[in-house]
Image 1 (cartoon, helix red, strand yellow):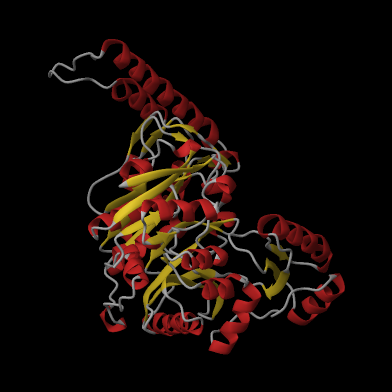
Image 2 (tube, rainbow, N blue to C red; image 1 turned 180 degrees about the vertical axis):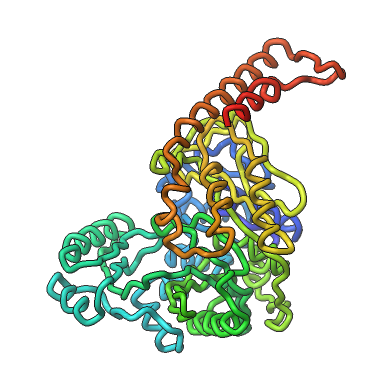
Length: 505
């Protein structure tokens, strides 16, 4: 039995893992870089160890240092979270060779599904539909032209070793092919150390739908239904929900079975995600498999009622799956918004800095997976995600209305965030009616990026920041505040900032 887990990660996912471990009465060990010395995952873990300088290459990506701390702390297992080393086959091998349990799939499964060309070959053998295209790398420019003539335009260039939208280019004409091929190779080399690129036919109006799967070490597999992830910007997910409006019971059953076939083909262990592209006619094609816990896993937990982190731990220590496919039921609807420290009205420029004031939403059907607190400095060294805001309702409409209410309640002063942008999506008519695909943001530029939003938001945020700072300085100076006539402290933010902000809106 696993008694102590080292969490090789940071931020909200580290906190998410700590909480599940606490409920399982498993001790936790956090690691932290220089800049994360005062981070929340350091405070909440049972033990915490310094791992190195702030850059991730010298800290959270330092395999040998992580293993050294695992030995010093007496850990039984290592949980990689997502990002960083979570899909690194070499790390999984090193963890196992050092005598620790890796909470994730085998290195072989990670390596197979991490190489997109190899994964396509394996899926074809397993009977899982794939997008028409090549099952080998593009050799040169002459080879690329030949393949495009066979597949037909438009096509998508994709990095074989990639993910997250890196090394991808959409090609509509033969004139675009050569410069885009060179750009895709260059980006792939810079991002993954491998410039191999392959070609797929481009699906014109795709939905991005993924299936959550679980497998154990005894050959048992189940799927936990789908997540709709089509609201994307530059191939990066922005909003996720489940169930998908596109899905029918028949299609869900068929795609779920193919997702399990994909997992079974690599003897998958633990939690993973099989991603598909689905066209408007219900034709679906394998996209990739993420061999880790997904950022958007909370929506599945809300609707299915299973703690995926706990399931990962149970599988890693050799337990059989405790639930069968027949027992899986979707109940209600859940939506997730990713809250980032970035400025949507300035090309989503990252906005690191100190959180001066924070008020997280609460109430029925609201869940916040976050890690920042008032006074915390959001660093420039890592992904700018602040939190995942998740709502649950008996219906899709209720889940969306709760999300709007929760976004209205969410106050983060000191850094710019994606909250205003997310509100616009939630209130968009096509989104509310479920009429969207992966082109949603591109086709709704005017509604989602109104010309006057940047100036108005900047004025309101500046007013709020000034008011919050004045209140902080006043409290620090006097330790008292003006009375509101009822013997209670009167907030300067409430009295001046919010009132004026609402008036301007």
